[in-house]
Length: 253
Length: 241
Image 1 (cartoon, rainbow over the protein chains, first blue to last red):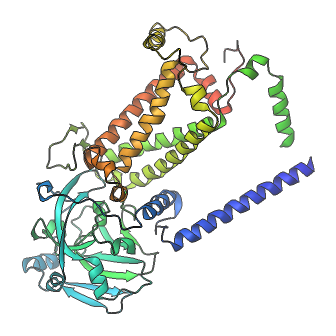
Image 2 (image 1 turned 90 degrees about the horizontal axis):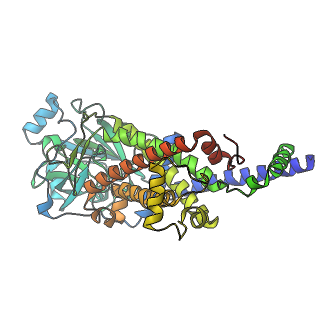
Image 3 (image 1 turned 45 degrees about the horizontal axis):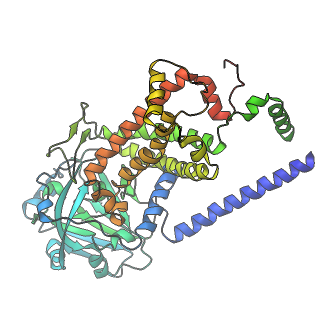
């Protein structure tokens, strides 16, 4: 009887140890290949890790989001909360963001700050994409801007960079539920050919409610990841400060 | 522990012959059934939490408050719950999909589909199906409540191989990451909003199935059938419980 118990205990301990080291090894390799999201902790983090990891394996070939014809552009394009109402933003808006600059710093060889004119001097490109809110509604619009990877090349983003943080103007008029104080994206999205710093929408300068002067436009994410009213970008390898705002970090689902 | 197991086996062996020969619920079916119960409940609750943030359904690629809708649900827009319901929805979806894979693989290996769910050829006729339905309408008890009748088999097969795949497909068709790799998942359905609408149609059909499933369970004996789905063993013949 005791011999049986011992053997069973040994087998159980062996299986537990093998399982634990298997999970640890899987975690190590998954992290090395960029399959672990920053918000991997806790119960919800299990689902987030499975979703992010499997989607990063699926999309590792820089999968492109489908694009539409001009005739498919929606007549109505709602927003979740209007533009900032404070005096500083209003005066920038009033004179066409002449004094606005986008600071780019962090893990870059040449920290820089770009005016709207300087960003428009980069090669421009347009994409007609579906924009969907996590609440369920959607619209199609044409976005014009500079490819984010071109700006990251211009500041010489270092190879050890893992994320890019986007810091917007403060926007208290945005509803508390959807307000994002700042956000990060991984390098797979930052270097993606459809990822823009957009300054125009449907052929017009980006409207204030849609994030003027510049918003991030991520084709493979839901609306809330497309940070509006950008004022600063930080290239980083840190995963601990990844997002200040409600909702999960990965928006590809 | 080994002593307990031995006593348990002895007790099983001592049961009357007809019980030992009676159909058992398979282990893989029982485990995945209860995982599915928990995850489907979580998915329905969190799905409702997401829906109330925008209780309008559309057809095609796009739809918002400025466009025409297909269905306006008569409930107010409540902004906010979708944000924290979504991660639990996707966690429960992973649990259900993994349990579903285990169920399908296990069901093939144990011949569960062939022996318990595939209708017997002689039952598979309009007369056989109509007979089962008319027996139910006349409140006539089945001779053997522990084997699935032809309507039950067809319903379970439809839930497992049509409804759940449909829910998973329409769910994945709403994921931008997934449709960037497989755009056909969304375009074949008519677009992103069509996929969303069909997701709720499938969820509605699943709720309909659950209501009928619960009603039948209560009619045929809630406690004994729940116990059979937990332990795998059915009560000895003649026992009322």
